Length: 304
Image (cartoon, rainbow, N blue to C red; front, side, top):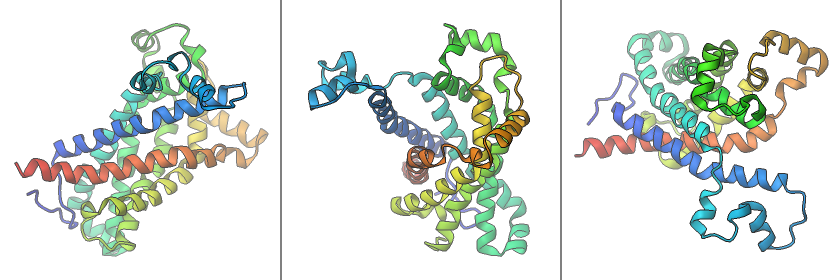
């Protein structure tokens, strides 16, 4: 059995955290990547779909007549960048936040409790740990940049492969890192904080890791929704920086000024509703799954 931390939460092993968060990332890709591909193919189709046979051809294209397995795997185009980024991101974020949480609990628990009270202080430690991990997430920025460019500006690649782009662009792939960190800090604070507050005040859990799947799911809805809303303005700026051609010199502040002048304040929340409807479920799914799987893997590993 792993010893409890000072906050009352049971401490899981590092292996369990990696396995749980990686599995959550893989499951997220397996469930949502084909759904996303299907939606994009349907949106791109300009012909009338009158029956299931025509729908099959629109969704599976040249693989429409093949076996069910081949048709399913045809729904995973462009998975390389998405898989590399998403799995590493989930392992770093979901697996790393508990380590930051333990560090803050060991060194600053009394400060948080004296300032905010025991229950709120505990939830804020979890939120602050998430924020610190979110800032450090910029180490994965090159994969995020390449993924976004592949999705929104594929001509920027001009036939170059992954290694060639890394060699050509170098540290240029970290362009916009400051805006990414500024977006991740409040977003991750809200994600882990919203979940922690739900577990603390709705379910009154002494040990957050003891939450059931349904409790993790509901708590993740609170966290994911808060995260997407809080980070929306900076996320718009970050995306506009990253989707430009390699070598573009437009700064984040210039983009901010142009947006405010030409598009108004509402421009900073563009895409929020679609994001809540699409990214929201993915984030809720993977976050709830990771929070459920990490304690499960730990129990499995320690029982041997």
